[in-house]
Amino acid sequence: MKDSSNQAEFQWNPAASSQVEELEKHAENLQILIQKAAEKTIPKRKTSSRSKPWWNDHISELRKTLSREKNPWKKCRTEENHEQYQEARNCYFNEIKWQNLTVGINS
Image (tube, rainbow, N blue to C red):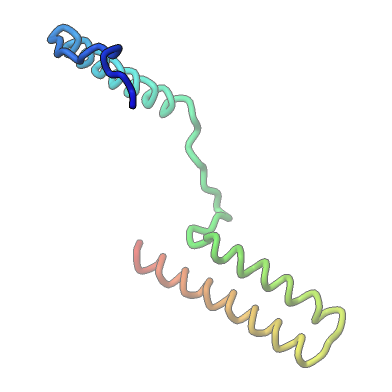
């Protein structure tokens, strides 16, 4: 069991309370200044005429899957490889169609 007699008791100090409030005020002002500096200096992401607003991480994964399924089919053109490739291709393009549709509706 610890001896609590060594520990000083907490006493409320109004001067310390105002110091905390002042410190929080300065911290908030510093945060605002940092945000303004960042907005002025950090470039915004620029879109090009070739950028796709509907592209997302899920479509990237589907594209990788499509490539993984296409390579075996190109090397060994079996019916099984072709079916797996077609399934991956259909999932990929259906997702793109769905994203195009939803982006069109939301804009």
